[in-house]
Length: 153
Image (cartoon, rainbow, N blue to C red):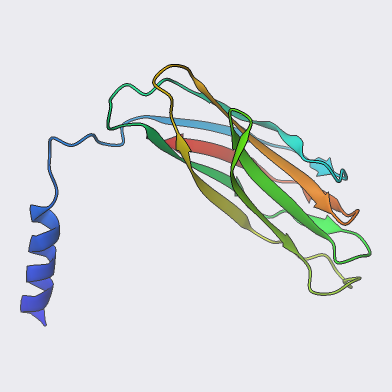
């Protein structure tokens, strides 16, 4: 077993080229305090917007963007929930959400949520990344802790 593991690790190391581009840049924003959404239309999550610079290297044209909502919850009377998404220059690049399994929950549990998306960086212009959300089926979505949006490329 040790020999198989050693061969496996050797294969991984041999495929790693030190001259390849390395994830070297990051951006991060964090919003705090309580926010609510009751709209059936997507609205921006206040404070969660990044501006990513133009791609510098021909091989460095993608960013990994993460939306983190540590403990949001939703209230409502028709399978309440929240839908959220990540936009890059106004185009949806990732979407997620949750709903409760009960039409009218006795209590509204916290639902930790993280969404990761690949964002294509332009070599011609900056990329604006925005997080948005909406309340599902007339419910109200609530964030009462920090929420964050980050990118690495």
